[in-house]
Every structure is written in structure tokens, then in C-alpha cells.
Image 1 (tube, helix red, strand yellow):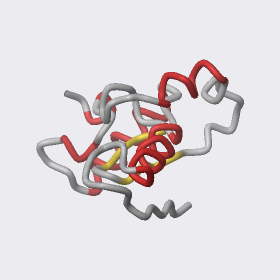
Image 2 (cartoon, one colour):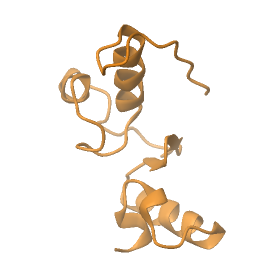
Image 3 (cartoon, one colour):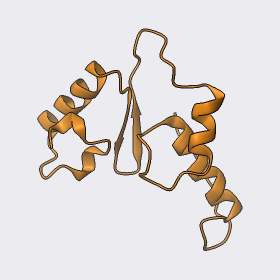
Image 4 (cartoon, rainbow, N blue to C red):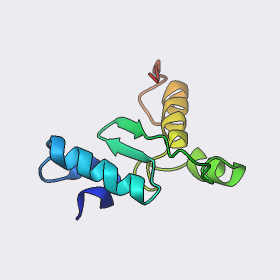
Length: 99
């Protein structure tokens, strides 16, 4: 797939600086401002309002399985919350989100 088509750029066959920047550029041009690179979420400023934060969007990400929805800050929050409570198995785990 094209670099920007991948929601998780770590899935690319070759991940170098050019592929990373190209993938981010393609996603930005399609107004897909969130991109995963492995466990890291990259957020780009769209310089315009986008309909990404309403209650409906939040509810979709609340109980999502990892990778079933496009990358989003709500997915990061959901994973951290459920891991903190031990809902994903293995017992409760401390969480930290760096912004």
C-alpha cells in the first residue's frame, strides 16, 4: 500500500525517514491527522476544525479492539484506561501518556 494508506506506518515494508514523512504528508492531505507508528500516536495540527471529537466518535473508540478503527487520541485514552483497570488481562497496569 501507499505510505499514507497505512494507519500504522510501522506496518510498511521499509520504514525510513522518507517513508515516514511521505506517509504523514499523504495522511495530512486526506485530513487524517492521527497516525500510528507502532505504539506511538503522531498528531498533526490540521489548522482547521475537523469533526473528530464529538460524543459519537468518543463512543466508537470506547470499547474498540486495537487496530479496528483509524488511529485517534480516543484510542490511546481507551487503551490506557482499560489497561489501568486490568480489562485486557494480566491485571491492572500503571499507565503514562506523554504529550
